[in-house]
Length: 186
Ligand SMILES: [Zn+2]
Image (cartoon, rainbow, N blue to C red):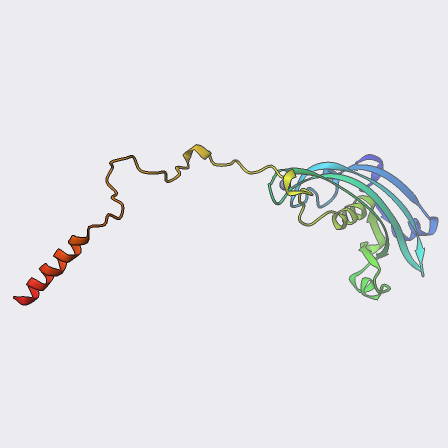
């Protein structure tokens, strides 16, 4: 990975020095990628600025990414563009995360160390849609349609091929009645 984005760095040192980074990373190289529903292709541009907020080590993470994902309607690739710019408090334990100010986003940096790539990966995962879909239904490529010629519409039967319509035969019923009557008489 270029320029040590995956290198473990000391969170306190980053925050105290107000370190700043700018990376352009292939999504495929981020930890946890390729994602479910992602085709694995794409790039993320990330700008990070470290500092402190109420004593907490903090990173301001801005990113722009274009990731190839799989549309969950038509199962074809779709390029998803996302952007985000969020403050993230850096905590060294789950317990510390619970104590973080309410509503703040936290990132777990065990032993006070983190890799930029992991932080960017987490922010990108948060920004990407869980169920990627083409914006409009019309953009979805329909699945291979079954050959329409196979469908046989029930057309009219050829002339003279039986299937008599309702023909009025007034005496047929009469005869049936008489026959039935004859039977009962026996
Ligand atoms: Zn689609």
